[in-house]
Length: 347
Image (cartoon, rainbow, N blue to C red; front, side):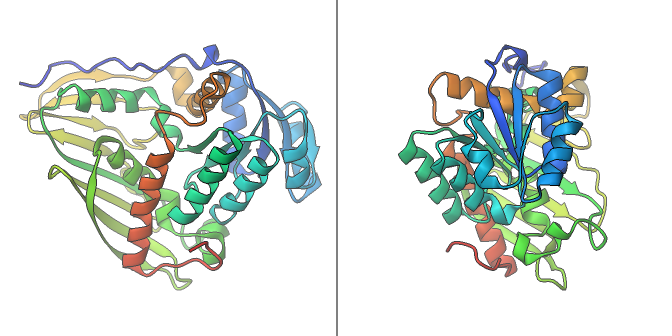
């Protein structure tokens, strides 16, 4: 019989993580949210930003209180005041920029999707292993308290035997959205930007994925506009992972066992309400995130990086290298079935 209450998250307080000195490679929108979260919700220090445009780096640095600005990525990764580099450039550049930082002797946190494909991800990880440096995919949702509740609920049998996962991520970003989403040269499309969240969420609770089935539509530019990805687990579990950049969807998630289910409200991958619901529809329990997490959820991944580096660990147990490779492998198969390729990607 399933439990009637949700487990409590085991997530450490981000303020307790030892402070590191961060350099930001690619001062765009996600980098702005990241720096704000670090400054408001951690003891981490952002000490530098680097861009191909010095003026852009200077504006970014001034916006967040003033720190060093560099007009090249090479200067940023070489800066002696930087302990760890946060790579926030387009997907197409993650492989090269992560390597650049690692070769300069810097630890790295690389925005998701980690690279364009599994081969590129493996090359980055192998370099981190060779250099003895920390490296992690910035799948920030994996470090949030409500994701830990989901993990624990599945592990502890709160839902009974896991049966199915359903998650969707849709935003109206095409055709009038950012250029990086429409361009094959920048590894655009819904999959790497949007469906990476549902796929990673499903993979978190399904330890073995036996098969991947995908269908979808492509844009005139040749990137995926939307897709439905069905995953079959090694024990018969199923997952439906839906993404689109042509419409706004509910962005909810459900994890269902044979005794109960968990429901997560819209924008499921952000700090959010979690409900435990009986098979008959009765709400048994709910958990609400702290206000600081709702505003600054990105702080948790940075705190994990700081803890791992201070303890001499090259990878995180919550987002280990093999898990990044597993998710990248799923997305490679989705692209193969949809017929999406990117110019210049490592084979």
